Amino acid sequence: MEKFTVGDIVRITGAVMTGNVGTVVHIDHKRQQYLVRVTDVTQNYFAEDDLELFTS
Image 1 (cartoon, rainbow, N blue to C red):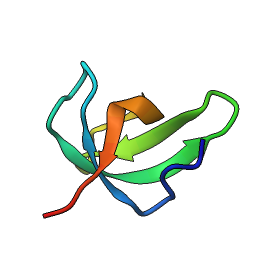
Image 2: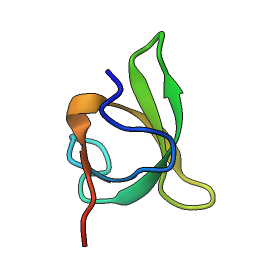
Image 3: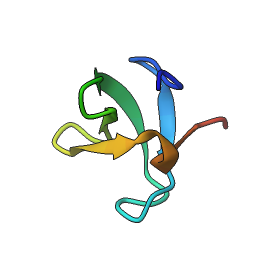
Image 4: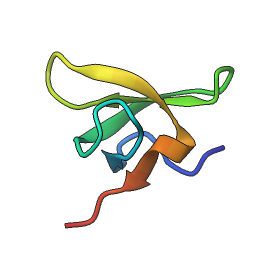
């Protein structure tokens, strides 16, 4: 784990919320998942394989 760090901008590639871009706001080491905030009211946990670094 630790492919991403808090503050990284990522694109979601998994089955849920595919294509959305958000910011990593927390890393849950126990569950091995990243909490990604997409909007002010939308966030979700994702596995490392469901994310990629966003580049414009």
